[in-house]
Image (cartoon, rainbow, N blue to C red; front, side, top):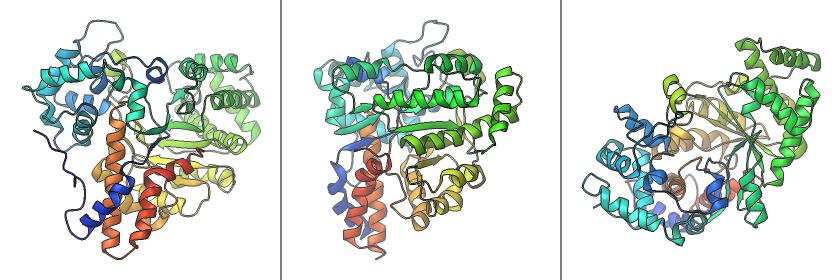
Length: 468
């Protein structure tokens, strides 16, 4: 029998624990602001039931998959689809295998999120195990067939006020069009992610770049035409609620070339005979161009730097991306962002939210930078670090230099819908625990702690992402 202890994640010592207990009820039930994530907009447009429990908890969750793969389990046996269409395990068989290996997740945030989700959505108190696998599967399978657990109802139950999905530049947004037609757009909105046409090292890049020009009605053979194409697509995405752009880049490098240099670089790229250095420079210049467009249109710019993606070439070829083969790498934000910030960092209409997978640069780079540049805010701990310990390390490293008000609140950044309330709950508990420690040390008053708890749990994300 699992038991979600009411004091879970709170400090073990007094008076911090009692103060956290006092703060937490004031933020526990606040609406959820989810301004960045990767849930499937088809879920909310179609509002149909999930196919089975494995499709809800297992196959979309790269955190879960990578742990199971690390112990030698087959993705075929876990039901992960293949590019070649060959059969994989059906839902119940995959679920049984997951349950038989659930002990592997002890101490991980995945177990925290899943235990919370099973209890929150289905009232399941028993630990997932080989003995309980079928009963839990049947309970979930019956529940997701009811109106109460259709995708939109899940948003209602979780008190999600706003949730943003993330789509690439060539996406015509059919699901958001459908939500616009039935009046649901706004609660669910899109985010403009142009990596497919800004990163020359992605397979098929040149073909997509020409498609991009045709879609936007611009001549992308000229630098001005290329930027106009982005300007047009950003406007299209804003029609479907976008308030932000997102850029998944291997480094934080930016550039500020002269016009003649930009055109020469584009000519090189379009010939298809470019070097890795040319690709890096093109990506770097495009980051500054995206910032300049953000100055024009007010969209919030997000940079997610430091992921070395698809390190398992065989897995990428066999099944595709986002299946657990991505690894953190080092990031240099000080040198990387300097060209962009010198161009746009003092612009009143520009906001840049920086995320990192390199925790070593929180105190050394991002906190001092956000504590100076008006345009820069620090995104919450991300991916490998949006965990209880990761949140503690983050707050400990950034607050003294950046303060609380240069932080962008929280976002869940997930593909697993039911993990959203669990992730926000972990963040809110950790915020209350951190503030409880500071009140206990008489660094801040309890009244200040209440204000900051609400800021970091709710209002901060709304303000950072300019969500009215």
